[in-house]
Length: 175
Image (tube, rainbow, N blue to C red; front, top):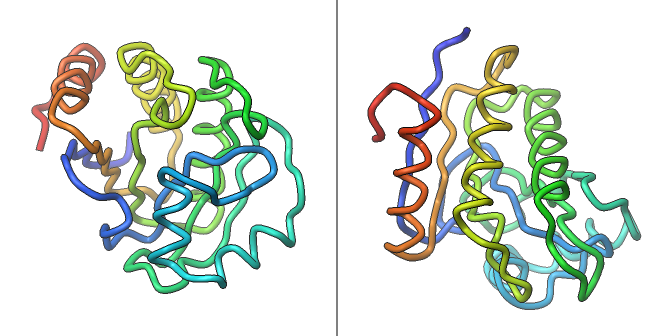
């Protein structure tokens, strides 16, 4: 397995200086409120325009746009739900897998992943963390490009949950 680092951080994902950040998107790629709204506000209209070119995508799919005015070079929009729909464990897993494949295809060295359960329709963070780390373990066995994966959480409670799940999946210490 190629060397990689996973860091668990509390903070604002839109401020990360990684090759890409993942956006928790709806299938219509409308950047309304929450993380999408923050990406739109900080990244600018270029990201919105690029999303519009894709139209509606399938749940579990992921698409790439530039990072606009963000510090990150790109945004991977992971469709977790239909517009105004519900997030599921399956959609989290598929969307993350497809996001990681897209990052690998573009030979990104670093990526920042948010709590994929956050949003208008909250999914249990324990189940989300479990799904994320399961997908990461499987992906990293054959990963070719990623060297740094940041999991950026908005609040301290989520950070505690993710640290606990991390230790269950990986035997290295958290950064």
